[in-house]
Amino acid sequence: MRTRRMIHVLTTATAAGSLLVACSGAGGSSSSGGGGKSVNVLMVGNPQMEDIAKLTKSTFTKDTGIKVNFTILPENELRDKVTQDIATQAGQYDVATIGAYEVPIWTKNGWLHELGSYADKDTSFDKADLLKPMVQSLSGSDGKLYALPFYGESSFLMYNKDVMKAKGITVPEHPTWQQIADIAAKVDGAEPGMRGICLRGLAGWGELGAPLTSVVNTFGGTWFTKDWKAQVNSPAFKKATNFYVDLVRKHGEAGAAQAGFTECLNAMSQKKVAMWYDATSAAGSLEDSSSSKIAGHVGYAYAPTVETKSSGWLWSWAWAMPKTTKNADAASKFMLWASSKKYEKLVGEKLGWARVPAGKRASTYGIPQYQKAAGAFGDLTLKSIEGADPANPGVQPRPTVGIQYVAIPEFQDLGTKVTQEISATIAGKTSVDKALNDGQKLAEDVAKNYQ
Image (cartoon, rainbow, N blue to C red; front, side, top):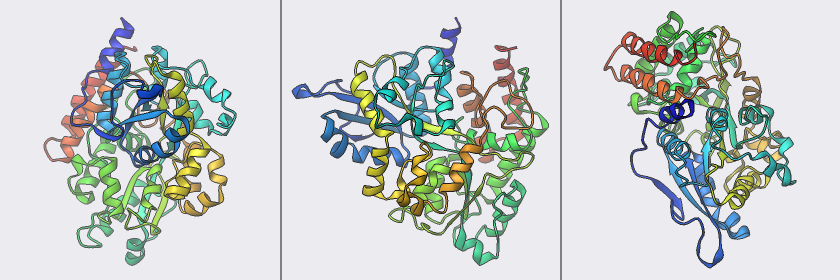
């Protein structure tokens, strides 16, 4: 009954919209003509994934003969699609991008292949080089590695240095959220059409829910107490949410209720906002002069705090292999290549060192070319990752791990429903009090499963 309930919880939402397909297309047979092999890969539509889709055919496929069919989806749609495929054992994909939230839950259900043994057999992969926080977050309770990190991230503040200089503002290296709110007010309208800050407002536990929960943590709030008492409408949770909603409504990006990671990345890189609080992995795109108007003019600071010493989250988009695959050998070869030092070098040489999918290997931060390209953000990213503490992200004990999420199967549904209500408050359609009171009832229902 427990497993059946988990599957029900994890498959409540169905992916919508059209698929954005790169390379050879999605779906199809698991083997191609002439005896060659192929693997079907489902991944999130972030810049790093778009890069690998462009590079695979001329490198990995050329060297191995393995054809890779990529399906690329926006984050919310990806989460729905991959959950549906793996939880129901549909077997459409051989590889999928998932993260620290899914790995421990899905390994308990026996849905994923163990990957540590594949990494150990490939001496060039150098598993020992992987950053410990990434390895820990992608391992099961048995200590084995069940996903290979493509890139890792924490969160920090990014800002337009030229705007701050023109306004005579010095952004602290360790800012408070009140300082950021004050700065956002001062730089709002600093250039024609420019807003003070970009904060995700798009509903989704991994979209709006990620930055919002990190804000809740540092304001002294939590989704649940250690003994599973729901806290969604508690004073601290309410104070944090009011602060977040007020800030984005007063000084945030246009169309904030529909803005997720991708929209904020575009807004920042095109000088439509002066600041952005989000994933450290965004820095590489902001420093890419081929697509960003502010490359070389971005400043970085640690995630803003209130009551905690730090507030950066911890995440890795990682490659996982469902137990249903019939192409384990070919799939493992692709994953090992995609997370390798060799692939990082390929990206650096072909696309630019700032675009390397970093945050997963210690050796990356010792590469001279990367050090030069990532000089403004590399060290801060690494320190933010190493300083994140999923076991103690707030001011009180937690019932389970997780900084920007709660590591239980029900959170995917709970977090999405609550953020739908909060997104509606950003759009001016409801109030924070109503959103959180409704969310409290949902959280109380979830808590009953654990009390």
